[in-house]
Structures are given as structure tokens and as C-alpha cells.
Length: 68
Image 1 (spheres, rainbow, N blue to C red):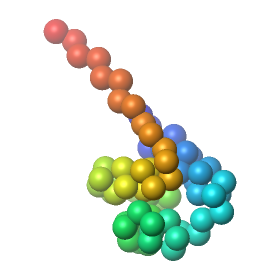
Image 2: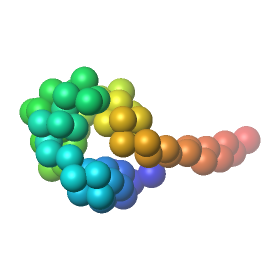
Image 3: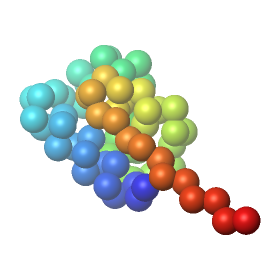
Image 4: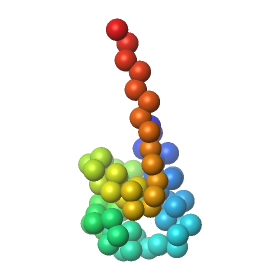
């Protein structure tokens, strides 16, 4: 899944809920600097993205295809 898609989903839900970056950071337990890095599409730990998406009630699925 592309980072741009995840960031778009996070931004859309954040706006929909009317949350500030500070509120998102507080509710998710992820620091404001990390939230800003996510929104700037910089490298962050997946656990940080997962925490933000969880608090926003967003889910992602991973479609993994293995070749023999």
C-alpha cells in the first residue's frame, strides 16, 4: 500500500472529525513531531502509523501474494 494513500486517508479522517494535530497526537499517543512526519510522507515506524489509523477508526489490509 502506498504511503500517499495512507496519508490521504489519515488527512481526510482528521479533517472529517475536526481534529487538530495536537488532538490526534494526544488521542493516538504518537508525538506531534511524528504526526507531522507522517503527514509530510517521511519515514516513520509502522507502529506509529498504525496507532494513528486505529484512533481514527481506519483499517488497512495487506494483500500479500507469494510466488513459489
